[in-house]
Image 1 (tube, rainbow, N blue to C red):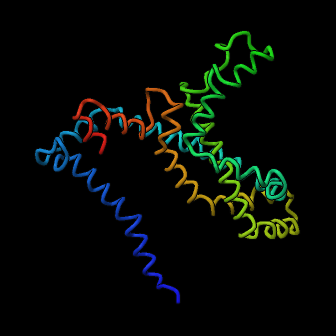
Image 2 (image 1 turned 45 degrees about the vertical axis):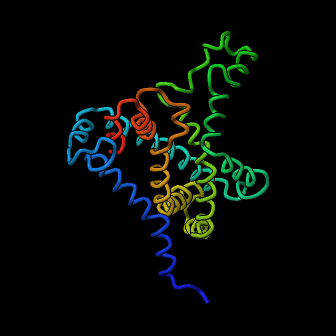
Image 3 (image 1 turned 90 degrees about the vertical axis):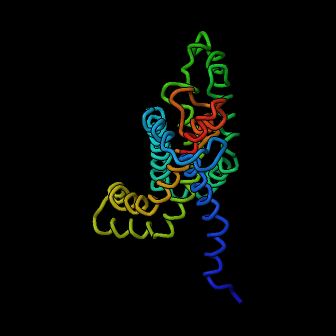
Length: 256
């Protein structure tokens, strides 16, 4: 006998929602001085410090920008590849290769990029041995760089296979091949049918996942910690820096 659906909802609330809610309440109470080692009563001083210092806003904006760029690139590439090559991506070695990056945790991906993309990494040494550059310092800086190229490339590497699987599944489940055949039977060319019908249908279905993954990348920690600059820092790295700082006054700001 199947358990009522309400039991599963209660289990989800207890295991997933309540711990998150409790953490948010604790963070709020800590930020206004009601709990914690510095808690001496209600105060908005810590909020005033955060709102008056532009570092937090720059960090949030910077994190959102990297999240949007990473997911925009990987999602756009996955959408185009699935629409252009729906059969090739689901069979043979391309079908198997989609799963391999999903086995790599973010911290391992960060170390991988650090070893390959740095000026002392594999790519720079290969370029030097091939005579493309005369000195390793001529190799472009791809990690801890001004434009966060290493962070974006690493997140694209991790997200692209996931979106290939997601959009590939939606391609068949939503009956996109049938829609394309119908459009072509009415006189539309293959390219127009793909651009005007397949891509909008798939994008609409995958858009909520794009948004959630963007939030995930915005709050990522390991990759920006290894590959990012000291300033600006992504919001997760900035938060942990405040938490571990010797100045205890920064801990409430970290919870904010």
